[in-house]
Image (cartoon, rainbow, N blue to C red; front, side, top):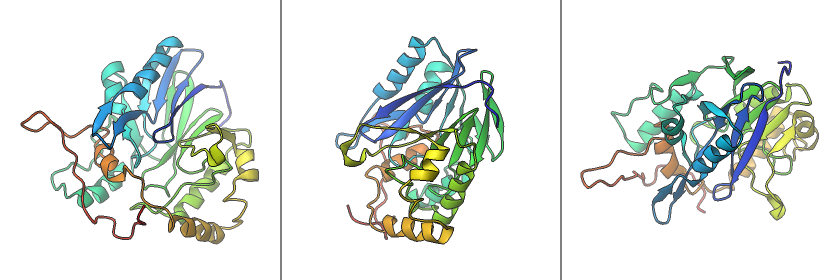
Length: 295
């Protein structure tokens, strides 16, 4: 996709979950999308808050922008999505990849939610591979990028691509593939599709774990990733990458919020409804991931 006009990208690092939230704006129309917003959650107290989402809204106002889309790249395993809150504040539609229905079916069974709807109706739009839309006058193409999850997508907005949990910064390598529905083979192929974008394409990742204690970073290029990514330089073939990725995944404990977050995020980010006492309750299945490494 040739770059017609370059989007303004604002990244906001959320240090509790090492997540990066994005505002992607068309400088011409001042219309924007918010990508992967975080609803704050403290697992120790069970408290939720909207500080991160409100900071995004403050940046939107500061830059004189209008929110046109609220996008998630996949159902996150390490934080709650703030999409419903932001939709309520802005009126903008929510969207995610169409394969989310497969993730819903998988996790519905894990949580034993027999009446849970698995048709993606919790979002306003589901994007299939190759679908296009616009942020103002900036064209956006959707690439299905499975591997980390079944439903992961990349949003390619002119010369910027939002690549979620596929490639991290070059000194961090690539995303894990050992969640239910994950696949190192699929991730390798998704990465090859991302690396086939023009070399100067700006890549914006979904997390940064600050190796060595460095400051958080989230922007690279296709050329830089191909040249420097520590997992890709070790693996010149699909088989080698799968071996490297699988060996590393066997050493990783599950994210501390995976069982908290997925039940919220397969529901479009909507929290469980209040019960008769006015309180909301999460449902945590025991022994649902029997092969997980203990943290």
